[in-house]
Length: 68
Image 1 (cartoon, rainbow, N blue to C red):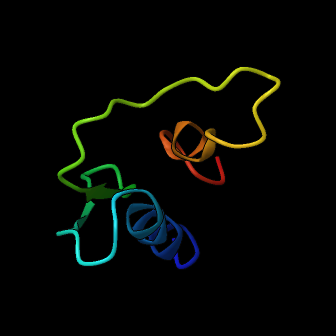
Image 2: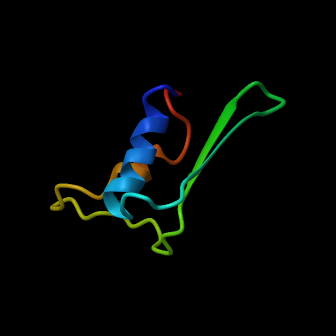
């Protein structure tokens, strides 16, 4: 979690721009799992990068359980 949140926020700055509003929400569920949400105003949806792309997979990998 300590590495994941800064990476997601840095991703917003890198792709949306410095000064973009970012919302970070951390919540613990009844099952003891921690849910982290990082949102920004960019309307673009997640995309699935082709195998030939050198980037574009970061958020797709981050969505879902971390370290599970």
